[in-house]
Length: 431
Image (cartoon, rainbow, N blue to C red; front, side, top):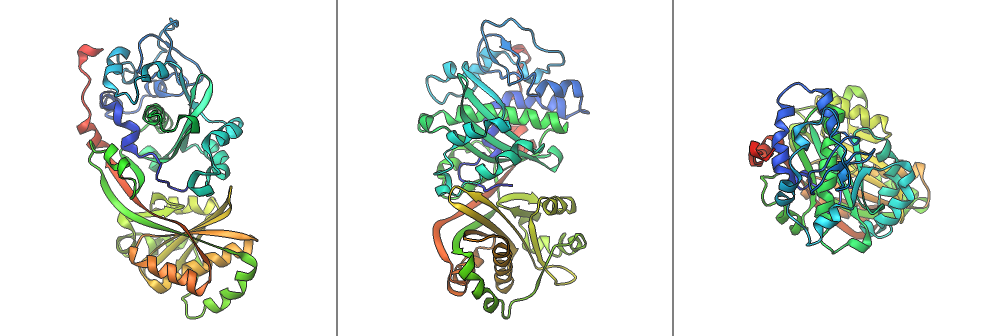
């Protein structure tokens, strides 16, 4: 769970420099998973083929070390054994000093002890105008077995982070966020760091799930044409566009307005496991959801009974209308603290204007029943026609203040099989 931001990783970007090596992943994915071979991709015995020399093996991602004479560990697959000099010529450079930089890099998992270091590097006070979720979600990311929280160190200093999640049992990879230290911004180093964390993430997902991801997902801010241009070599499908609006108000005086605003709005009920039958396709999903995806704090998830159960267990406040035999609306809500105060997200999936208003009001009431003081509401709708409805209702009827942080994001997807078609096989003469 996380805000999806314009700087989020997209899966094609994660893997773009690794075409030859990823072509060889078919050696693993085409047969039954071999634990010994998969362990070669783990954080304990993994090598990055990007610089001349031998490799030292530590509890972190192994880095090039000309002075090291350690041999590869047992079970090391050919996926990570391409000759380093050939790899150096196959990976595009972001700057003239890339080769020297790579020799000083280490990639590793984030730990709870890294909190202060990461917060100092990630600039949470300015990221997304201060509405940064990372301080609140840091420890959850570290503990989540389905999340890879990778840090890049240069000479022992954390300079970059990449967070990505594994979904659908390892069948899907989704990039959550990336950050680079302020002193290195604008120096054309982000791609180098992203490539490093991308391969690390892929290896971790394969190790943990025994599967090669078949789908890669990302969210791109529509105004960021540079991100679209960066992925021009890949066939990317646009799944949907989400529209996000920000509003705020103090909980105490706002409570008095909510009762009057409830008049004439339909009744909604908290989600129960038995409601899943009214939400699954084709009746609801096919009509309302973009290809069966729901967004929870902007992260896309394929709607399923098991996913809904995970959202409930995570404390997500889920509302659905009581229409039968199929529901017409679904929403998710939750809250966390940011450097600028409390944020409450409201993700609405419907096409009906009146139901949209009902979902907003019910989530606002839920927020005000739990929290006091100023609350910033982040309202997401998929149907673009509801954007004006939300704006008018929240500002005119609820008298909330509209904040200038509205954005639209594109949910993009690429098939793993498509990537294999793009990938160039590694000539045997190169081994």
